[in-house]
Image (tube, rainbow, N blue to C red; front, top):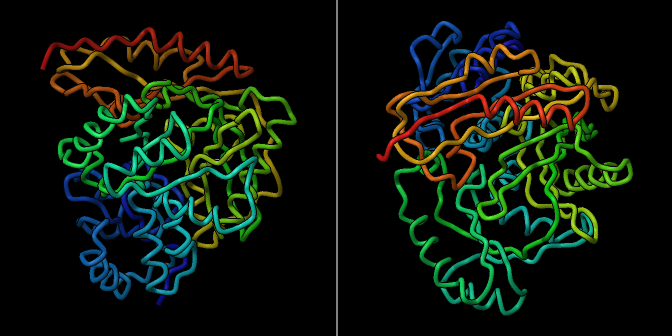
Length: 414
């Protein structure tokens, strides 16, 4: 028998588990064994330790757990858990986003195919092809011009994104892709299948994301976020909201996101849709059916009074009312990626000063002496984020960058 106040929570951080517990819910928690901390045990009624990205392992465990605990929905707030949660809901008839729809978000190639099949979304379609052999790179560049983008069909945090600037860069691109195929020492390789790559046209223009929450097909825009991106690696080092856009451009971005979600068949829950504002107008980059990272949950909650992650859990269980409309901003927020020179960390300074700063919203820093600092090839190679508030977006960005300079991470060659 289903318990309307019990949830199967798949993966995520200790913060996600606390959010579910703070809602007064019974939690059956699924986590990778090496990411589960014993102190989290008190927050869950039951714990399933397994590789939850392996459906053959996960299925019998959740079937048994459902018989024992009768949870009403499977939810995940982290990228690797989205498809498994959808599979569980499909298997047990619990509703929510079906796997077919979820997988259109987690597989970027399926997303592009879906967009190619329907009416145009945004200013233009983006040419895209699967990469199956080395010669495909030459053919794509000849057909669609340079630069173009190569990226994994799965994954997150800009990991594995390669920009091919010209025909003379094809050799270096091939070498980079071969290294990515065989990489086993990156944190992402344990949770994602970084094997299949796709090629996309390069679209010039600044990057934004539209944060939404969907209520039975009604897509409410929470905010439009401005992304500050490193040109060479495409790593998002900064985020700011509300985005510094004209009212007309902001509405074009919001409308594009709503059209995109309808095209994808998405009806319920949060989404983080990345859109490039090209010279011709908004162009879909990609999307995730979850709240964005980089402390965006904290920023949206502080500025708009909406904790989208808690709402995602309670909405899935039928315990929340839909938002009546788009929330109004109360100030602004920004976050920035904390980075350091490659090597082994010797000491970290300034974190407590930043935590104590009156304009600090949040500090999420998971690095200490002895930890390894990797080359910055994706957001996951960063060391955490800090976030700050301000009366407007300019002030929030300035506060965030000022606070960032207070943090010193000293490294030595590894």
